[in-house]
Length: 372
Ligand SMILES: Cc1ncc(COP(=O)(O)O)c(C=O)c1O
View 1 (cartoon, rainbow, N blue to C red):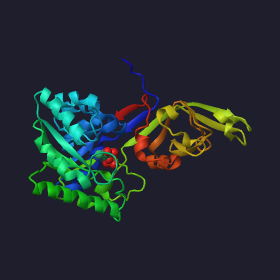
View 2: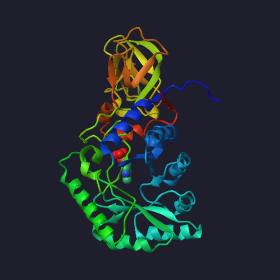
View 3: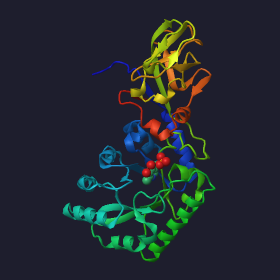
View 4: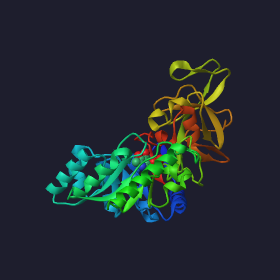
């Protein structure tokens, strides 16, 4: 067994995760909260996070594919696949009683045939495209198609859901329109004798900005990024959420370099004077964006140390002017707080021109996830 400490550690705060879950649950109550744990809980490690959220009262889990669903089936909560099922995934989804998505009649046909073959009745969740433009029955033509699903004897229509692409602020008229479209469809289905145990459309953005998407007829929300304390860049934050991750490594070397020495691949930084520099044991293989080259900072002994030159796969060079006492083995905070100072994931996102989702999903496979 490998008992060696990992060079780079991603510390995930379970207390902050709990705080975020409770804050969201309080905001949307009486609606239930489905925790979105796809892509290994956005890169943070699915099992410990799922266990904690199950204990906090999550109504269920949402994932992208069958393999992810199978990791969660033993925790006593319903697991649903949020996108679409590929033909090769149907057999396992049915065998394991996953709540299956239905995005079109062809998919329903395949699912029903497999459920019949396994002599099972499968709960389905119907996807409606009210404006996301990705998957599901288009809202304009959905009514007769969804009513047809009643005729599939091995499928039980259990949920209906839609998704919002721009619920970034409460003034967004497109999201308001989507909510109206979806409510009308649900009402028309009800008039035609088709009702659903679960009705939902709000993910993190809409939870922040569109209370109407969390109230009746809706009785469930699906949240991912807010659980982890982050938001999409343009989203107006309306809840007190706390970022759950800190990324830490150690100083691998402290060196005195002469004036005119250049740093790293491409020689993009030249020292103007004799300088003490540090080499930290983390690079882009650990998830540090290349965009931090010559622009980002780390924290050592509580002080900001600028990144010099282009960072490489395993190492990054930093200026130690502010901490001449630093030595090999000292802790380096890449994201998080040390002493009085902090570096936020959002600052990385800004430097890279991306969002928190991509950064969370990009921490390297050798980075040890630690739950604190
Ligand atoms: C259908 C669906 N619901 C919910 C979510 C969760 O979104 P967020 O992480 O923005 O809360 C996603 C994520 O992309 C999704 O695709």
